[in-house]
Image 1 (spheres, rainbow, N blue to C red):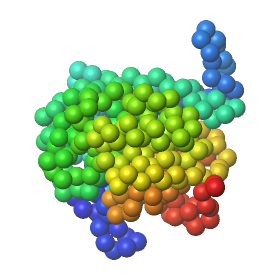
Image 2: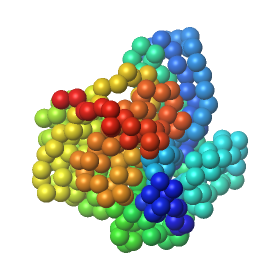
Image 3: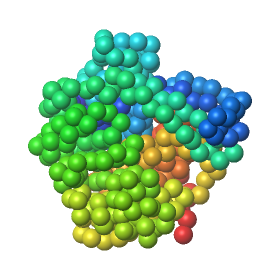
Image 4: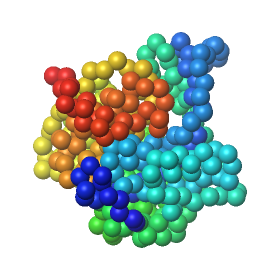
Length: 323
């Protein structure tokens, strides 16, 4: 993997590999999200780059990382949009594969203008067909690196092979278990940082997570499965950490005017990966990532809403988490 120079410090940027999804986001906004059988007249529509993996790669790159993406696209206009977006964001595309058989994935996103909350249907398409040998060759070609970032939006065979290859290469493994899906227990011990939100923590632990105390119970269960550090994001309630030394830490959220929560978790995870790659401790990395996520929800969209490093640094200079 090439090493980028950081023009601000004169040194090299921390290197991050993201293996995950790209899907084209088809986003519509309306006064509220329709219930079953209801049709709602919308006020805004936009097509843009998305997918949890691609969003996290953009977030990490904008926050200051030298980022490489491993994914698969169709040979279609959405795939071309994805490739162009990676290039424009300065993301390494050496292992962005193209498929003649499968089309590029898509996400249908509905956003409520009343609350900023969203509902999403994801069709993985080509990125759900990444082959195990493609992942192995990619990680082998991209090391040395600091952090490997994974999600659950691609086929699990590729995820499992990425975990094995990442551990073999000595990478820190950050697993964002989204969308919520069971993980076979033999893989938990390979994960250095597991970062579910409330819904994902509930699915993985069997504990319905509503309060911080619920999150503590869920975190204990997840750590007992083998993951070293658990970080449960709790929206306005901040983030709950159970670190590898068995310490509970609660990091409050930042108060902002929310416009669109789509992609907030991806903003958090991409910035968190960057902070870890820079050597920040888990609390400092969480505060940094929370600031990036807070900035993202003040904007419409997913990848286009991700914060740049100067914005995050300025935000942290002028804001403190809620207490």
